[in-house]
Image (cartoon, rainbow, N blue to C red; front, side):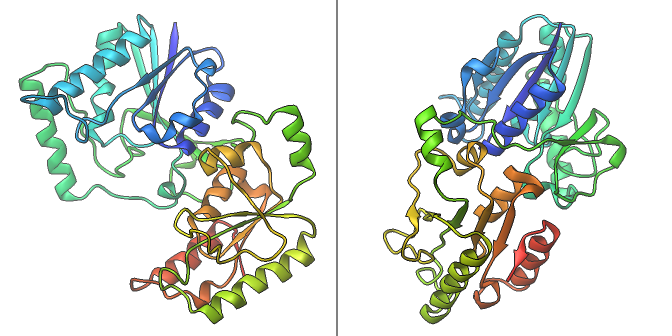
Length: 346
């Protein structure tokens, strides 16, 4: 028996894991391991053979002495029990240098009787655009983590060098990447995933019909004036430029997704925009709602939309030249990343 295990901590990880399970691990048993509660609203347990929630050892240690150490052991036991006896294990994670995940690499094959183990990297969006070499301090920390096996033989940390996510590690044989996202990984080891859209819970029939009659454009809000990133005059100019551009490039109804910290101000909302109110993460909403155009200033939501939709949708940024970025070189880095991801800059 072959079992594919997916360690996820964000809605994007979850959508990528589901795509891998459907397209690349069809004949495997699928076990989902969640280590962040933020993704709980996204999970459809019926899509998986088993779902396990494990607390992050550093943030949620068990009560009493050596709580972090005992939490690691408890997490190992819970995941191994969900997997059961297997012949082959395929472990998927967006990163492998963290102690919350790394110990599974050596422990799970022994605990499940697996004769073979493969490790593969799930896409993590912007984290994959550039490499993050392990610093000397990080490498030393890896060595210290190996000392846990003196107290518990099951906790054998697999240290490695190179990129911190594990793209250079000897145990990784495949790296999944998102379509349209540049990366610096060995092309012989990468596999590009299909679009992550349409993987979340589909809308009910009536809602889907109503939705089809709604906007083809989404404007994502941002507290620009409220956070001192723009003057009121520049905000007004940026908002008008967005509205004028949409009227020309994507005429019709427009949805407006307010930033959680905008309050009622809605800084980029023009008259006629429909305020979008959703009770799920934006990633999962975009996965079942295809917009032709997503527009904003320099919001993270623009990058989220590119991650979900791939190269199919038009993503556009306005007013970036007016933003008072906090930090040297941040404007240049933001613009460079936008252009690298084919986000139109106006």
